[in-house]
Image (cartoon, rainbow, N blue to C red; front, side, top):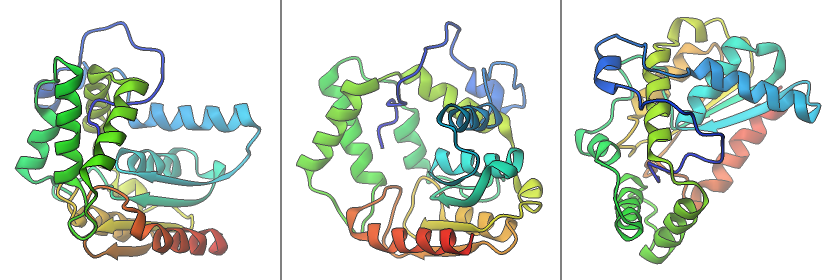
Length: 234
């Protein structure tokens, strides 16, 4: 994953969040939360004239999907959370080396940023479905040239920390739900996916052997079939 590619948006004019203070319980430097990001998604529904939707999110996107199910259940038809977790600090923890990859200082040159991204993709990816270096470099170049914003990544991390544990609120979700996770994910351990499925009543859990913190092409059919199943149930 490209740790500093966060998409196209209006950049905030304020200081970066203080992650150390956030971890200690001081949430004042977090400029927004997952609920704010979920509300942005609902705003997009409104702009597109969509009343209710089947929603799918991966990694932090899975957390936002979970928050959508909590805050705006009337706007959803089904929920799919991929390689994500509930916010419970006891589950879904990263391997220390994986966390270090995402928290190292941002590169000062394009060349080093691309090299860092390729290293991250390779190490966080799926050992059962390895990608070749040329593909990883091409992906890193696309991400870098489209929207590189390292401070935005810090703000996203702050939103996750500031939003806390969703477990108790997920127990009240009454939507068809699917949870997908790889059993070789070093960034969000598979225990995070299992906890998500356990928290949402009736959720289906699909654990994919050999999948890490990415979506390798070889598993697309299995994931698409699983999503089709939850859509049909809805």
